[in-house]
Image 1: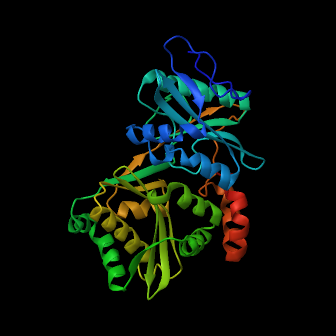
Image 2: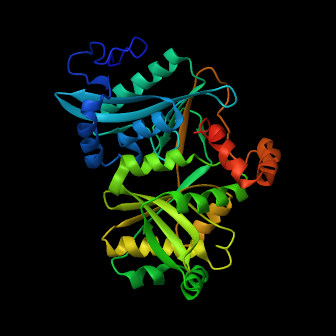
Image 3: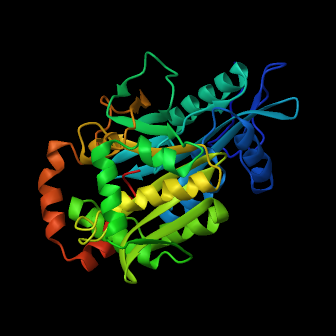
Length: 361
């Protein structure tokens, strides 16, 4: 099927497809509303297919984006947001979508899906990337190499607050009640300052580079009412914080962490309960606890809440590379770096971290 765009030459309207076949185009500013309307209605689409990620990735990280959509008869048939990362340390990739847990092609027709898939593969070849990556919820290419590392945790929110509390396993429910008895309170914040303080301290203890403050400010700016900051405080003092996204009837706590005091007062346990409670009262139906690596502390924490892991199908078409990338903290080659990073002063880690994490995706 000839339904690919001349991405190297920058042709915005695409080459001439076969009669009846969808044409593939690069997203332009005037089309973002139409793109997001499609994403809102498409069952396969997720929050991470929204057009706003193009602005966030380009402005926060400086990476080139290629947001493709397939169109037929004046109607969008599918979307595929892609971003290119070219790093001396971590390689050259084309992915849907870096910094996001879900991605890949979201389509309402097979011709649209095939057109986008073909266009992405040709783009990857022209760009001479090491690999093309789809972060699928469902498998698309059974013959592509995959990474069986990540799972997601999703669960239905019961209609009544008390029902949700009772559905939490007994030991985890005790931790939530500990947070309540500790006098913790939840506050919806308008500024990223307190959230960033708690989050950066948390990832520093894990030995992980932190994102820039600008990145979180952009997420708030671009996604507006669909991006929310909730802070947990005790006596006015920040204990933990979470940045959540809202999409259709789902709430997605995406970035969260606590200060060193959080463990003593069950700050993170209380924080996720408060988010679930608030979402229930507002009529949301699904709590998406997000991605975790198998055999990790985050994985165990979410299972303790009664959530069951659902595999994610991250698929790779290898181009210049011979192996699937493995840039994650569980890789033994990064253990010395993690130990050294933990010893850095927090202020220095917050200064240097964004320059590293921008290329990890």
